Length: 324
Image 1 (spheres, one colour):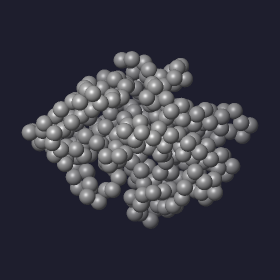
Image 2 (cartoon, rainbow, N blue to C red):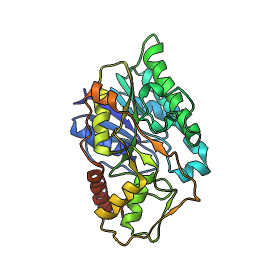
Image 3 (cartoon, rainbow, N blue to C red):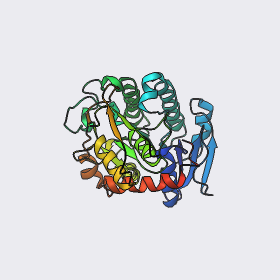
Image 4 (spheres, helix red, strand yellow):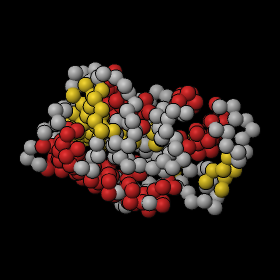
């Protein structure tokens, strides 16, 4: 599907978008990538970078002109601290971007639209891995209420365009677990937990203070495995598909990640302290990936340790020039 196809990747300078651009170029696609506040990542003649603001309909229309397929990876994202301080930063820009881009894509009759949703939109399921059909069973966790319903609203739009119109547009919805790897956001203001821990380990932060107990459990997936799953989902012929792309299994605690990072980077004299007075996120979030495994043939290849090792290596080599 991708070789010699004209493909748009929004958020082409972001974490998932920049890695996806490189993968699509390898697959022989002719890639157009939108960038906004950051510079281009993959300097390749097969990539056309288009600077713009996807909250403006005219920029969405420029972006979709002449493309066959769209991977919508652009988003206003940040870490937990920013989300707590300015919760609307995740709501309005993302809803405007997605609704306008879908409309623009529909008007030019793209062959398929892929939307990156989020496992944060799922309702609580306790210690049990959450399944795709449970998305709308109840509200998301309260701490994710705004961003969760924002993602759900976009998923409703995906159903509308792919199933409820006379002339439909095929849409694939991918619900990632906690993705990490090279080109992630490592800035203290925007990084998620795994990238933040990597930065602090490499910088030899002392004392190494962690918010909460360190017992929070997450489904962690290396970026290359995630892109394998994303492309398998994209290639599925279903006119509409919503699927988890996750590691599955029992997950890993923050303490697991810290211990592995300290060992990999030989930070043996770290003074790790857990500040239980600080706010915590949800205690457990496990993702069921059986649909991706059974329907798409998805099988993650990287262990947590292997993925963290590759990410540390990349960050050590590039952090001085990586301003995000």
